[in-house]
Image: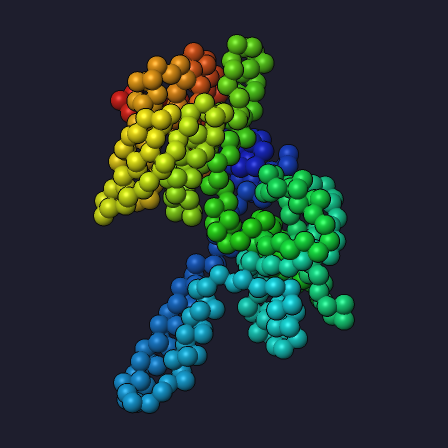
Amino acid sequence: MKEEKFCRHCGGKLDINTNRCLKCGKEQRDFLKKHPLFIPVVCVVLLICISIGIIFYGINSIHKNSDSAEYSKLDSLLGELWDNISTTPEEIIQSYKDDFEESESKYSYTYLEITGKIQSIEENDKILKIQLQTDKKDDYKVYCYFDKEDNDEVYDELKNYKQGTEITAVGEFERKGKILNINYCILGDWDTYYAFDNTFQIDVDLEDLIESAKKNDKSIALKKENIMSFDYDILDYSYSYEDILDNISEISGGEVEITDIDEETGIINTTITMKINGKETSIEVEDGDSIFDENLVYQINKVLKENNSEKMFYCAVRKYEEDLDLINIAYSNESDITKINKVLNKSNLDISNFKKDAKSTSI
């Protein structure tokens, strides 16, 4: 049987050797797969830096009482290598004017954060081309490209931004003559970029499956607004348990109020004290590897059960990619979840059944 995989953007079926989806045209490879030499190059550069550091250390050992200009040069070099680049259109243009070769080496095909004011906006095939303001005397032009797929929540709002509005985006820099393009932009700063694909958004394949199930069974009340989906590693992407709890409360449509959240972090565990519908409770979650602990959900369900709630929160895990597990949390009644689980069992999604307590979960 011919192996298949699925598009990470639209869910369409792909041949196992395909790197681009024929349905939506999206690239399937991540940054490292598209740039296989990235890690070897970084390793070589690191070795060079270590060697430079050893040399400068030796110089300093000989001249203990003298100031070392070399150290400031080394600090500057290491800063450029490891710090995320944050810049403006004016800074990039001036950099190219001052030293073209050095700028080309620094910026070319590098992801960077850029902040500037909007000059104009054009839309073509669900891609926004935003020109950033530059000095009218400059021949250089700076453009940011925003794909609707990658900026779905803010796309329509961004499209209606006025001239002069300041924006910050992260994307891949590419120079074409004096046209400076920032491709594959995500609206926001570096924190937003690192959190991309780890936000609280229902996975498109699961959304389609639920909508299809509701067409066949009108009694299913579960909506996409009642489900959130995120990477197990979300705590490594500038999110906290407070963010997760806020979203857990949100998918209940306001039926479950989680307030007065207080996190106390210890060496091994994190203790979260909160009020759930007015009842105070403390939950201890594992914090060793910064991985989301679904025990949080099961402890919330205990409080809801004590309050005779008909609806609870259910967890299911999906193997989305080789190194990406998604935790899906749904807020619904048991009858609805039973129906959804039957649909899941018949689907081709690699996702476990939704479960409401730790004893019955295989996570």
